[in-house]
Length: 374
Image (cartoon, rainbow, N blue to C red; front, side):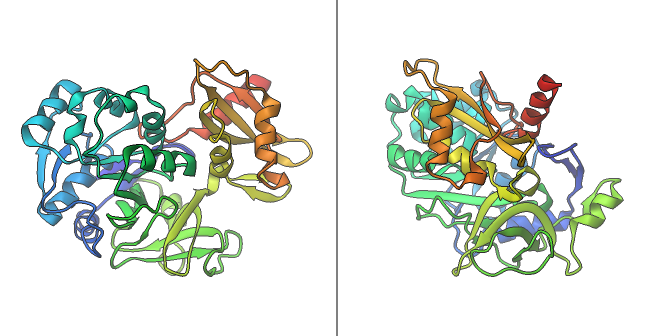
């Protein structure tokens, strides 16, 4: 099967996923006591098979012996009756669709939800959160990327969760390659590698293997890893190192217990004062401001420092407080090192471009900024 990448850091690529990859994902995701989906769960599959998320829930459900309800579309008129009729306990939601389900009184029948960080933020900010009965919520599964700490803590507290699970992976690893276990509230790490998978962190320049808590590129060797890209021999050759590890393009590290932590995409890291800056880290600081509804940070050219972080900020429309660029810049400078300050400035926008799975399109923000300055 060929599934195309989201294109957040470049043109979409056709990713070759084999039958072996799918079978490995089904088996390995159900091992090591993760309990992400159990035989007692009833899962709902409605996302399109053109995206890996449309296959992941169903395939893992088959592996553990859970019941799968296949919906012909993700239209609320189809989904909501199915939840009620089949007593669905597990769903995977896209950010753009999840808000519609949040408005339904049928929400209280769902005990486990898989969602993306941008939707977690919408959920936390929604006034409906105080109006609907969420007492049956037990577990939230975060996929796609790591939610900012302020968002994760808010979701845990407001929904009184028993489990906050995170999984890390990409289409090139046939979805999840690390997972945290059901029953914990660790919102910082992405969990540990699934069975039969080796992972390492290497220096992005030298390729030297790094030890615990040293940031570098995350590399994976696993039966989950795909053979390459469709008609892209150069990209396929660059995908693996000489030890057979897939180069993820993600920056992260692991701790002494083998838990992995995702910092950011390597291609989205900002190079300021010859030092690396994680957009996600700066976004997490800005998200602390009560007037900030949503924020994405991208690198823009800087005459002195090479690049500087620029914040694209969406404010709450009903907020009476007048927020200034200086106020947000100070919030960052008070908490982060000088190279992580907003040297690229602050821009207030009405919306932030996202991929179908809710990932910020930082490259689009950067391109739009450069076009406006040209």
